[in-house]
Structures are given as structure tokens and as C-alpha cells.
Amino acid sequence: MASQTQRPALSSSSISQEENASDIFSSTDSKPIPHETIWFEDGSIVLATDVHLYRIHKSVLSKNSVVFRDMFDLPTIGERGETGGAVLIAEEWEGLPLVKMVGDSDEDVFHLLMAMYEREYHQINKPTTLPKILSLLALSTKYDVPAIRREVIQHLEIYYPTRPKKWSKQYDTPLFDEMHDTPKDFKFQLLAAALLFDVKRILPMLFYECAIEPWDAIFESSSLLDAENYRRIVMGRERLASAVYKFGKIVLRPHEQCQSDVCSRTRMELFVRWLDFNEYTQHIHPLDACADGLHGLGQAEDLAKLRQSCVNKTPHSLSYFECIVWDALPDVFRLDEWEILEEEVA
Ligand SMILES: [Zn+2]
Image 1 (tube, protein in one colour):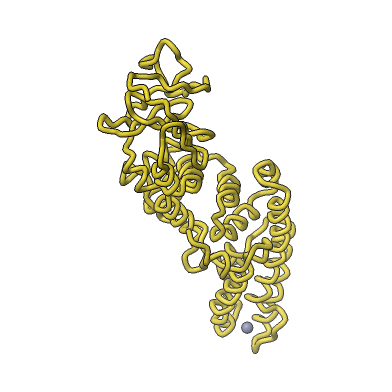
Image 2 (tube, protein in one colour):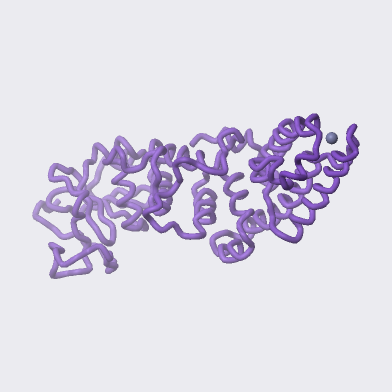
């Protein structure tokens, strides 16, 4: 193998907007340049994207990624070793082995390496960004980086949980950093990524959150999903709408006569208004309806007409309804049962 300094012979000519005139390969501006931060002088391997070179440590890469570990374990790296899209080539960069990250965007590779090298780059108790989440999920899956994949999934699972107790309408810590503009269709992007990278356990809640978006948002996001999954959203939305009628019925019990005529009549009237409200005014969705409880069903002066014994039944009815919705959620979107979705190892 040649030991003299060589420029990596990469074919792409794409240039990152981050780059500036300090390109050390300024004579050929289509070549990737050393990254300004992920460049360790004691690094033992160079990863190359179309845009940047990253000088890092083979041992760190091996320890984190099963795919890279397998690649480095190949008996010879003379000609080329190729695993899962990354190509280790005989070309060298100043005596170091060079790995072409074929098919990976520079941004994806950057986020992956940052997550490997910086302890606090992505943590489940801190807001993150959509590009970070999507990049980490994509490459931790592609290169089999179990610790990072698991952490990203755990992070998403806080907001798209498998179990009702953990879900809340409002979170103290938002998923995304408000300093960054998060695209409006982020839920659909997350859903598309969860489907693509096989993160089954968060699918029911992601489908739910997408299905309760306004129709125009659902239409605009149709290109992100294939026909089958788009259909799950549309059909699931229909089923959720009918669940909301059941919510009113279970909580208000319009068909039950209690000892008070006023209470009985009020419950019937509230139920009729609940149906009208949902049909003509705005859609309330099952889990939001549960979170709002009885207060979501009527004005205070109407609710005051209910007998205490009937009001006392509400918390029980709410949790009963919530259980039904949660149990049925995968089926609403024609997914596997919870037990199967949950058992999947992150
Ligand atoms: Zn009553």
C-alpha cells in the first residue's frame, strides 16, 4: 500500500453550505474537507462523506458499531472491505485507512459521530431536533449501534408511549428544542422513520397523533407514506371519530335514569350536544377527551345539575374508556397487538 499522502478519490461534487474558503483542498473544491470539530490528531481512521472527512478512532467505532467491528475484523483490508454500505478502501489518507460512507448524507454521519463522542449530544431528558433524531435512528440502525438506537427509541417512547400512564397532553420537557424550527409535518416524518427503521413499539401512538391532525396536514403528508400506511391513518381516523361518540355515552350514560330527573335530563342533553359538537364544530379525540374529563363535556352550570353520585362515577368511566382506547389502539390502525409490538427489542 502506498504510504504517501493521498487525497481520497471521491466522486461526488456536492458541497456543504457550511463550508467556507478554508478548504485545505482548495484547488479541488469538489473534494471532501476535514471536519472542523470531528478531527482528532490521534485518530486512527478517516470516514469520508461527500462533504467532509472525519478523523476518528477505529476502536471507538468498533466498540459502538457492530457493522464496523465486523468490517475491521475482516482478515484483509488491502483491497476493500464492504459492509452495510460503508466501504473500506485501499486508498489511504495520510497513512490512515479511509472508509467511504456510501449512501449516507454528511449530516447523518455528523450526528452519529457526535453522539458517539459527546456524552451530552443527545439525551432523553433534553429537547432535541428532528434532524438529529432522524439521523441517529437511520444510522444507528444501518450500522447497528445498539446503545444509540435504544436511546433514541427510549426518547421517542416518552412522547409516543406504549402504555397509557406515561402519556400526557403536556410535557414539561418538549421533544424538540424550541430554538430550532421544527417542520409542521414532523409527526409524519417520525412515523415514516419508525416504519422504515422498524421501531414498532411507538407506531400506535405515532399513528394516533398523525390521524388526529387536521385533514389538510394529512393530505400534505401523503407523499411521506406508502399507500398502505396512508390508508391506516385515514381509516384509523374514522374509527377514532366513532370512539368519541362512545366516550360521551360511557361518561354521560344518557340511557340511564338516576334518582334525579334534572340530572338524568341534563346528561341526555349534554350527550346530544356532545354529538353535535363533534359532528359540526370540532373534533375531540379519544385520549384528549379523557384528559379533559367531565369538564370537556359541558359548561360548569350544566355540570352543576348533575347529582354527586353520578359525577362520582365519572373517574371510573374515564379510566374504563381510556383502557379500552389504549388496548384497541393498535387495532384501530390494524397493527399487531401490543404484546407483539412491545416485545420487540429496541
Ligand atoms: Zn344522576
